[in-house]
Length: 112
Length: 114
Image (cartoon, rainbow over all chains, first blue to last red; front, side, top):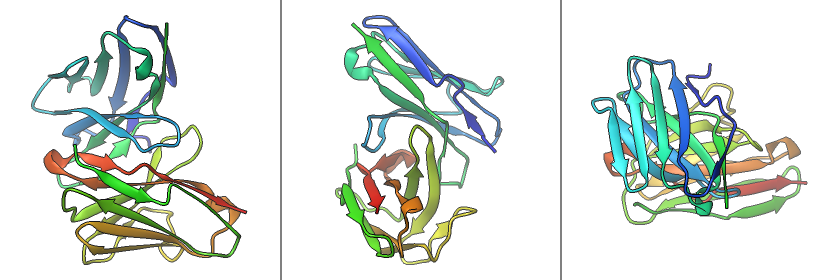
């Protein structure tokens, strides 16, 4: 039962342009969402999160948007840099859960 | 952010042996730690939730006698893969919950069972 879905397995973007990663979820109980970045053979690194009481959170080049009615969130990276090339995971949690439900990930490749 | 240390980063063992992986929260106390497994080009699969001072909670389909978890202190959880077989070869990652309920991850352990 895939409760968090990242339907785009890969994304290629030119350096300096915007990267938009999408994530959909099915569980209406989810109230906290996170984005992680992962390089091969390393653990995920936390990027940014958003609570369901907000619809936007920004941190430097990273902005996460949440549309609760559509059960959809997105991560915007602008401007994209070569070092942003990695796999990005969307994750969600419900109240009292503690644990996270991860999406399948999106491989981002930033080209010069 | 909080730092989670995982050791070893890579281990190669013979079939039938047991392997222990350690996960430490270095600058914070973690009452709860999590163990994940990742297959190539797939998502992180939660194996179990490790609670300090109590038994771990395993996800459906994960053999608790195969994957022993001990959370003896607020900064250390261990995962022991008992009687490892080639199908246990995988990338194992631990995490600990820091402030604001953010999970911070270790660097992962690549287990190869020959």
